[in-house]
Amino acid sequence: MELLDGRKVSNQIKDEIAVAVAKMKANGEKVPHLAAVIVGNDGASLTYVGSKVKACERVGFESTMVRLPGTTSETELLKKIHELNEDDAIDGFIIQLPLPPQINSQKVLMAVHPDKDVDGFHPTNFGKMALDMSTFIPATPFGILELLERYKVDTQGKHTVVIGRSHIVGRPMSILMGRKGWPGNSTVTLTHSHTKNLAEITAEADIIISALGVPNFVKADMVKDGVVIIDVGITRVPDESRERGYRICGDVDFEDVSKKASFITPVPGGVGPMTIAMLLKNTLLARERHRF
Ligand code: GUN
Image (cartoon, rainbow, N blue to C red; front, side, top):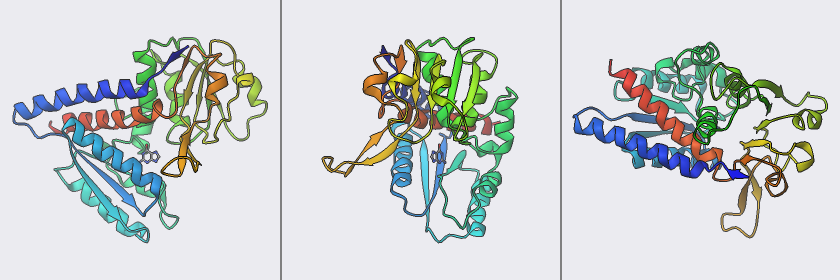
């Protein structure tokens, strides 16, 4: 069994990005600038956005965190998005999800200019991704592709089973794994809450990508020997023995499943750090496009 070490690979990617930024600086060019909008005080969201800002500092990007109160109206948020669309100093920006209930997320994500949509959530960018056109690929699926590539995991002709059909992970992942080329050329099954006989389907899988958010859902008796496991779950489980009062738990019962797997991502330290590295990569891409 080989560990797909997202922490190590994400550090390599950040180092590569830092080199590119240093070159931009040496040439007197403007460095990439990412903005992140967060509405309300959700603890997990604040942590994620904090990590994104810290990662920007590490590679030499500029960053702006826009904090809006939880009572912000949809109109106010749309106004802020229009400002960021028009602001030439900002190369790309994200709206941290989830948003409070008074705001229609779909409407908000559609207001982000596709050229600044470094999360790849705008329908234009999602459509381009499905059509194999150059675009921003959502950071978590992009990070998974990068992990598969750097560890030279064979995906061609393999049966990939994706668990969960979220717009952020499961759905785009199912499209990307079926695209032409590598990593891709997989035969994909997208499973969800209405899937019957899930354990029989996962038992046939060469590659399982689980993005469900249910701790320890995938058990050893649901997978075959030699399976490749990508665990996207990052659920906070109460744990009094930890100083912060919780621990992060993946979708996969790592202890038992890892004994059967050929490759597996740990949680934490697998997919999570890759997401941030790929957001930086998309922001660098946005800057490079923005120059012309
Ligand atoms: N919430 C959970 N994951 C993400 C993500 O990748 N981007 C944004 N903007 N919000 C999220």
